[in-house]
Length: 402
Image 1 (cartoon, rainbow, N blue to C red):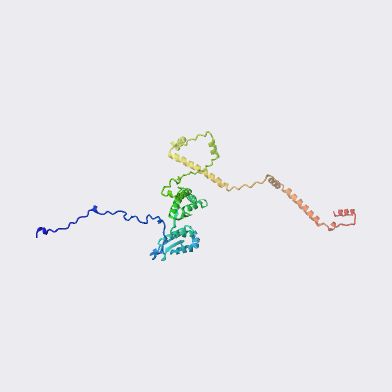
Image 2: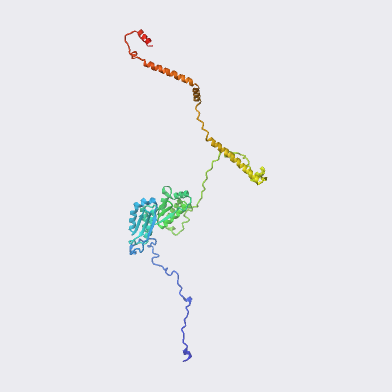
């Protein structure tokens, strides 16, 4: 065999050129589809759930519970059958626990819609926030959403918080009603939360208005004006693709400083201020200057201490004297109220002439005794009229009686 035959031809493996590789194009699946430009299709509509889409039901039980305040207990107890019947249509079980003060919703074997448990959770949350049961049940609809805005932590001062919350409600709830009409949402201000129900677009507007009001960025009345202008601009199809900034008003926040009440000046201060040439005030002297004037500055520390101690003892002695006087004053009997001058003089004269009074009383008693005896001697015949007889006889009879 020749060497040429011995040489076996080995196959040559050519490495593929990386440049020759087919490059993958991004977005290859984003091809135009026939329904993209179809004007009859509304992509924002939410289709109603069909139970046929989930015939087997839920594999696991999901449940949510929330607490409610004590003042809502009576109302929830009365309206609970209505809530229970509304949730039963969707195959959701609910329980009201009055002992713990909680509401619980959970899925069952009859539940078909997987998202209905989230809606049921929103329902019990709204009921706990004082939303009426007929209004809260509407949250189970697919088109209805809810948002609970916490406003308690936006303002620190309680008085300021109450004023701004009242600003959101308005006089006779006029501001709140206007917001409900313009945003097409149900709004309830309760305590430190604002519960809103409506579409996503309306809820976004409500949240922005509430936060701007509580943070004192913009008054809700100005937001109402802006919303009214937006609604009018939305009716014009020519402005659909244009910016509306030039048509909308721009409000700048203004911090208006309140005037502080003027303090009433005393009469002495008014006189001082009224004087045309006020007296020049003497500059307050330092302690060292006062010590230099009195000569205490050059004394030794021991002498200064002794002088201070002596002053302290003198003050204590003076204070103790005042306290003794005050204590002694409590033992002094109060002065009796003085009567009128004439009455006092009469009483004094009466005391001096006691004997005269005694004699007058004796004479009066004697006179009374005589009168009594005279009445006892009275004869009934004296008072009987006699037809016969002369006047002289009558006179004689009188004389004899005496």
